[in-house]
Image (cartoon, rainbow, N blue to C red; front, side, top):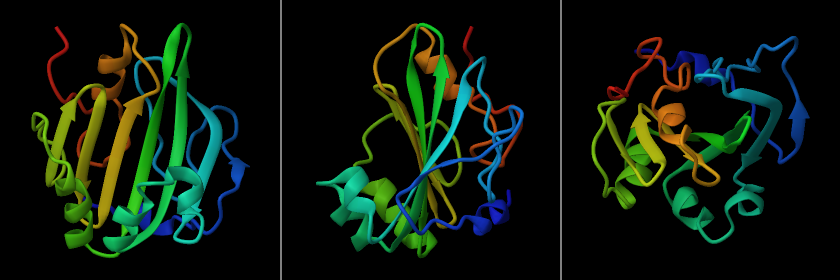
Length: 166
């Protein structure tokens, strides 16, 4: 379980960039991500410690207190469903990633990374110095299966099936 693919993220601005060619959803180390028909909109938002407040005003202090380095955000869309948002936070250390994760730990563990939880349409987990959050911008019949079968966000198994969807 190697997160070295994330070490190439170069997140130093709050620009939205057009990356990805011909359906590929890889850019500067962010892994290719797929989930049951959800498509990346091929835009990527990147924030560093100077621009984090533009993205999460009101909660940025927590991340900054735990050694925040940068966050890369991607949006995935599927017809008639609310978008899924994937946030990949790089922290200064594994202790910092755990600190962010444990600050509001309250839902059912789902066995991803070194600690994880899923509840209310939000999947949160940490591994090494990375904290990941995946959530939907609304409710829909395919939201939970979409989140829980997301492939490529974390390099542990492919495809990752967090829980049985039967």
